[in-house]
Length: 634
Image (cartoon, rainbow, N blue to C red; front, side):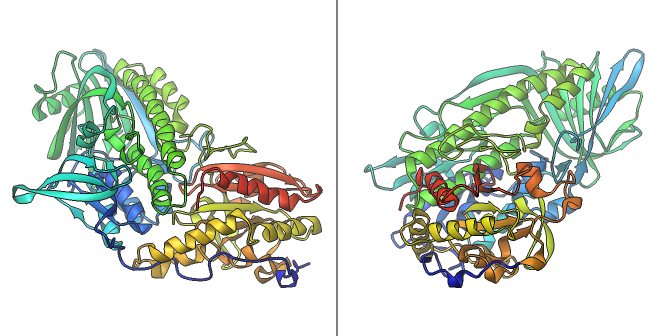
């Protein structure tokens, strides 16, 4: 039985955007010479933020004090959640092809009696972690920067190199920030910008310029050397992530790397200062710790040294919410758990879409930008607490305790367990495995329009818009079909908050369009903004494809053909479950559900409605408006 067409329904007054492209000029240029945002620092955090803002159509200035990008070394581990984040941006395929995938961890102990393997474990076992990519992807920071720089260029923006940030000021409460920097040839440049974001590292100049953002914490009493190079060795676990504890010489962490290289993190004695630490000493220590195995370097690409410290900035922004810090500028820790680059890019992932909505006048500045510090400072402290324990366990030499520490924190380490607390963006109770403030879990469904099986959490690209998933298990059920018709009529009526907000968003994106990119010819972002520039509506159903036509669905769904999903491929799921049952459990024949998902892929809220209740469709629409009405403005 097919769903009746909404053409017979006379009460609907659609005032959403029409089928216009979401793209516009190559790069929006402000008429008054004022940038929407100035990003200081072109490492992973700064580039990720710049990529998001430029794609979304903001006019940005990107400054970096270095004459060129990172070419070797530095951060190297990309966690499962970060891989998915890049995929939401349609990035990362080349990294997956050229990087090294690490699936297991080995632990060894050295003593006067010899060197012995103490255990081997799966890095991300399917029994405890539901991820699409159950491995760490290893590739040096320059590869990540290069990918992001190319994408930024695709949006029409270049990094201004050899520019050193000095200070910023503001002449009036509503006026732009005046940002001063030193540029090549000893000249002084002044930049006008509505917002400033410092992604300029642990010694951040931007942090120093913002009152009360001093960094606090306690240094850890250990010194480590880091070395990347190609080896000739007979050590058997060179292609696994390996920790070796030596009672006499200290600990070593070995990480396989791209281009046949290996990274060594080598702990020095506490009496050895980082200034005294040299490359030759690190190589000799590695040979001592791994003896009797042979270790010879064919080449060395990069060497670094550091003292471990865990610090968090007292504040992540100025009181007026105009200047922010992200990445290492706001938190520092040891690199041994491969968290630094991952946490930094997700600071930007959190802040970017919020800056876009506020810059467009579509959201309450205090609420939305205030949530950046609320959410990311919590994660910074979660990371610091974990990192302190993890660094101690690596240095402590107890393989069992290290393995237990890893198992306890495995969700956080992978990134999928990074969760935000309750707030205006994360409201209500959890249902099934869906929890407000947590990542949307993997789910496998079939896209109706082209019969492609897809990962539903990744299928809708990041365009700065929210996602509303309407879960209606059986469209042949007259009560469920009636629910979505009534929901459609109420949400799309001219007086609804969703309609009014969508009109405001349409006007904003018409005046300041998203960047026009060559790759959009293939990715077709306009498929996801046919109803609204602010929200992408999606329908998930277990109804057989032969039993309904998209054209006969209510209007917000019939105009969203690329986001109608069939829940019919549980055999392809990571856990062998259907999407609806996996996410929400057994809804039953009398229940439907709505799921709000934020632009960064986190669940905002979830609710279930009894279709036998009078005016259930109206109640669902009212629930939807209560969520967005808490922070949107127009």
